[in-house]
Length: 296
Ligand SMILES: *[C@@H]1O[C@H](CO)[C@@H](O)[C@H](O)[C@H]1NC(C)=O
Image (cartoon, rainbow, N blue to C red; front, side, top):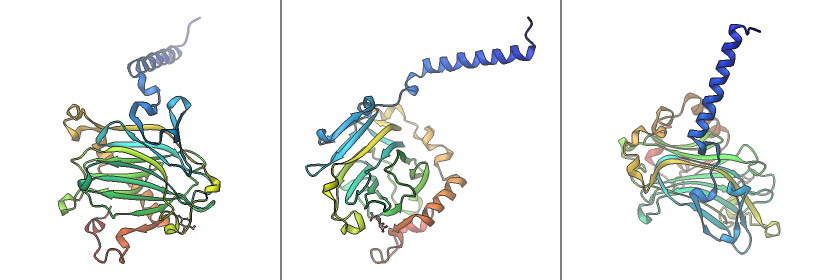
């Protein structure tokens, strides 16, 4: 039987595909395997309250009356992108806080990029507070109410950090952008590497409705879940291996400014879900901080 030419072509294309896919998986075996907790992180607070699950590819954090808990990356990073899938505390989570942040650990010169998830009474929206510290100066809080229940499923929370801007995203939707406005004399974090940290703790003196809502300990223990740890950036130590900072993918055009689509999504978040912006808090800042005029 003779196969028609076009079938032979289709079959050979298929063979080429199969061969190149298997070659790829031989060359890049790691890409098929999700990262485990132990590869990049260590427990920093209360071992007994952190449990590895799914063969170390996910973890469970626990908060009870005796303690919260926390973990940190083993290494530090200078620029890059860090993403994590998190399933937040479910039910009556008022007074609990999950923090996920990058921090240079340098006391008075601290650079820090914060995500803080403030729990709420059942059925009330979870608030995400972000903050940006540059060289020890913070006080740049913004708050957004999430447009979904973050305790029902894992959602992706990420921080991307290039020489041009820092973007906080929820499921790849930007919720906060901090632009490099050094040209206008506004400091931007770029000389200190930062570690990645996360904690689950009790903060019912301030977190929910300004501290009015207290933790309901009868609902304890509280759990948060993390998986798909993904950190890509210039590793410290090892920084010498990425000397030409500006050639890394996280410095590419997509990370210099928001795409038109992302800019639209960002406006949607700010219009519909933002509940607090330090930039417009005249009581705290009679003189509007300079970066607030710089736009997005
Ligand atoms: C909790 O819910 C209340 C009522 O819907 C809302 O005003 C508040 O922003 C929510 N978040 C926090 C952290 O209080």
